Image 1 (cartoon, rainbow, N blue to C red):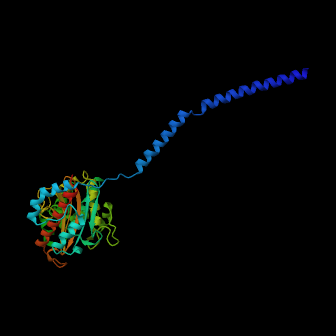
Image 2: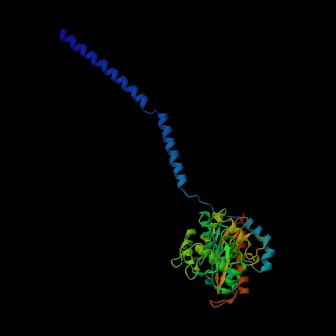
Image 3: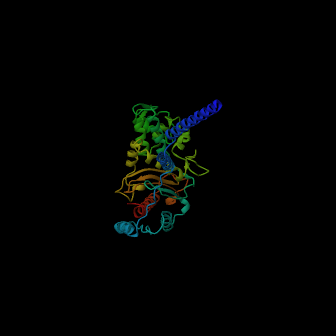
Length: 355
C-alpha cells in the first residue's frame, strides 16, 4: 500500500510538472512566435524593399519623341517661306536625319565621306550620326575641352582667376600673333583673358597659355578623356596631329550640358563667338553656343542649340569649297555650305523633335 501510494504520488507529480512545462512552452511560443498578421506585414515590407531596390538600380529611360503628322506639318507650314528662300526644302517629316543630310549633300555635290556629324537630343537622349568614328582634322575645336580642364583646376583651388601668368615664352604657331599678345598684355595674361580670346576669337596664343597651366598641350591631351572617349580604335579624344571624331566630341558637349553651372562662363563666351557665322549663319533668332574650328581642309563646328527642345551637334568636314590640306585661307563657299548643313539639321529637329 505504501509503495502504491508512493508510485501514485510520483505519477501525479510528474503529470502536474508536465502540465506546467506544456503551459509555459505554449506561453513562450505565443509570446515569441509572430502572428499571421505580423508575418504578412514583414513579407509586405520585404517585397516593397526589393521593389525599391529594383527601381533604384533600373536606369531611367526616356521615350523617343514621336510627333503626329499634323504637328510636323504645322512646323513645315510655318517654316515654308524661309526654306524656299534658302532653297533647302527636303522631306524633313518623313525621313530620318541622316537621310535628309545625305539628300542635302547629294544635291550640293558633296561626297558623304567629306562630312561627319553626331546629333544628340538633350532632353530625350536620342542620337543620330554619320561617319562618327572617322578621324577628322580638329582645328581649334580642342580649345573648348582645354578651357574646361582649366575651369576644373580653378574649382579645385589649384588655379585662380586673378593671377596674371607670363606668356612671353609660350609656344606659338604664328609669331606675329604671339608678339601682338605679348605687347597688348604687357607679357602676362589672366585666365579669364585667356578664356575669352581662345573661345570668342579662337586665338592660338591664349590657348597655349592655358595649356601651360596644365603642364603643356601634351599633358592636356592626356586629360581630355575626362569628358568621355570615342569608340574609334584610332582616335579616342584628340591625337597628337589634332585628329578627333564627332563620337568623342558629342561627349564633350554632353558633359558641358550636364554641368552648365560649373562652366557657365565658358557657355557665355562660346555664345558670343562668331555672330552670324558657322552654325548661326542661317539661324539668326536662336541662342547658339558654338565652338568652330578651321585649318587647311577642315571646317568644323560644335554647338549647343537652344531650340524649345535643345540639342547638341558636332559637325566636322573636309574639303568644302575645294579646300585641301595645303589651303591657308578659309573658303567662303565652304563656310556657306556648312551654314546650310546647320540649317538642314536644325529644320529636321524643329519638325521632328521640338515640342
